[in-house]
Amino acid sequence: MTRLQKDTLTAYLFVLPAALLLSVFVVYPIVDLVVVSLHEWNILEDRMTYVAAANYRAVLADDAFRQAFVNTLIFVAGTVPTGMVISLGLALLLDSRIRAVRFLRAAIFTPYVTSTVAAGVVFVWLFDVDQGSVNAVLGVVGIKGPNWLQSEAWAMPAVILMTLWRQAGYSMVLFLAGLQAIPESTYEAATIDGARPGWQTFRHITWPQLWPTTFFVLVVSVIFAFRAFEPMYVMVRGGPVGSTTTLVYYVFDRAFRFGDMGQAAAVSTLLLALVLALTWLQFRFGRDEV
Amino acid sequence: MQLRPTCSRIRFAASLLIAALFALPLWVVLVTSLDDPAGLGFSTWLIPSRLRFENYVEAWHATNFPRQFVNSLVVALAVTAGQVLTSLMAGYAFARIRFIGRDVILMALLSTIIVPFQVLVIPVFVILAKLSWINTYWALIVPSLANAFGIFLFAQFFRTIPYELEEAAYVDGATRWRVLWQIMVPLARPAIATLFLFTFIAEWNELFKPLVFTSTKDMRTVQLGLSVFQEQFRVDYVHLMAAVVFTTVPSVLLFLLGQKHFVKGIATTGLK
Image 1 (cartoon, chains in turn purple, brown):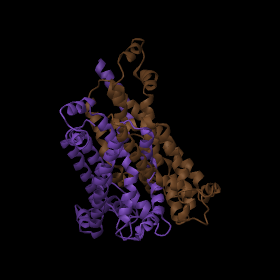
Image 2: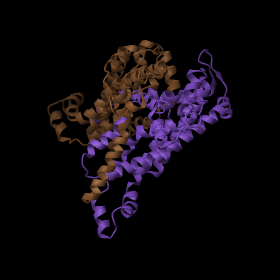
Image 3: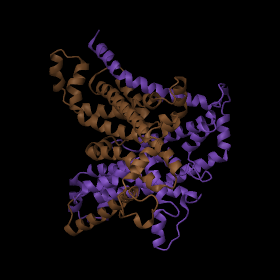
Image 4: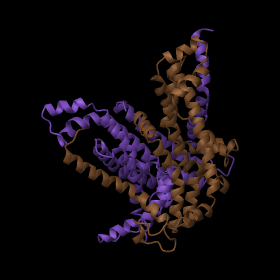
């Protein structure tokens, strides 16, 4: 055996456990997902019937699916732009040599390591119509707060607020890393050229240099938002009246409450295609230096 | 950036205010968890009026938190250990061994990172059902034992270690396996810490997997238990907040202890 052959054998043995597990629990399931989506199959029966694209046609015609799609878009629109502005602002604020900066960053990041369940339980209480702090604070300034979690109009905003609170620290850390990668000399050169610190420097130096990070955070946030399930489950169980039922929630409901695996798989396949398309965008338009 | 003193002071004040705003819900949770279950009110949510530690004991024994802690600990430790092991081996091979098909295999494995688990829950459920693993530890552990994130992390890390360190060992006739464990693993401690923190906290906080893959009370993990506890105790906010505190302490504590590794891990890989 040559050296290369021997090394190849060794390397395969080293890679085998990971490769085997990922094949069985990621690669094969992708194939199986598509196969299931082409069959009519209720979990209570053992029989699968091939129905071609019928499941796709059925879900696309289903009002609940359309609502889930719209709800998901609302969640994306509600969390992504605001979340990015907040975390970029936080990063700009905390990218300096002020006192206790590490402590302050940690305080903002801590919500991210709390579980969605814990955060959800806390926010359900904060948004409680009578006892909650949110309406109490609104009451102080003379606003009568809505019955957040029982309202079709206000449940989603409540879920969005909880998500923003929990995730701002994560994107902030990504932005901080991006800011710290901009060389100090770029700023010095700009100052010599007469750029005043503040808005001018931000617009002409920081923003363009930070763009790869910004784009990366954008794509990651959109993908995160598209697969949202836990906040809606914990806070309002997808309700009231389906107003917080997202695509993943719809899949969960179809598959594990109604046992309709075929239609659930069809929706999952569509969701997977969406995520892959978004990732392709990242590779196509973002430079992968982050 | 160097700032003028007044500017710096304003910045500090603003940062302090915002950080306080982020920490506020957590503080309110702590205060409430120690309040009197009978007399909770708006007036008490900023300054503790009493310290009733019995709330914790009562919440702990109300459903089955001791059992759920054991379940979560078993699952999180097993998954974490498994991921560290499989990622160390694969990451080392990709970083240090020249072999046929290396780049293709690496790309194939890394591309699994973009597939969210939520969309694969149906086929994975089917596999676990065929293995009769539903409602067992296996269902919660085995599908998570390998992760492209870990492989990427270690491959990146091992590439930064100079070759000379290994070469002496090969001259002495050591195998790859021994070099990995005796030379590379001790050097990789910071990367191991990073992966350990990420994986353990993610597994401890996981709701979706136990929600779908378990069915009986005694298999519930901490997060599923907390979710059920919430259903049963609805407006008993004092005990609910006590439960939030003790279920959250492990992950927050780990984060605070390993803050450096955690932040560095996000910054270098940009992934959860």
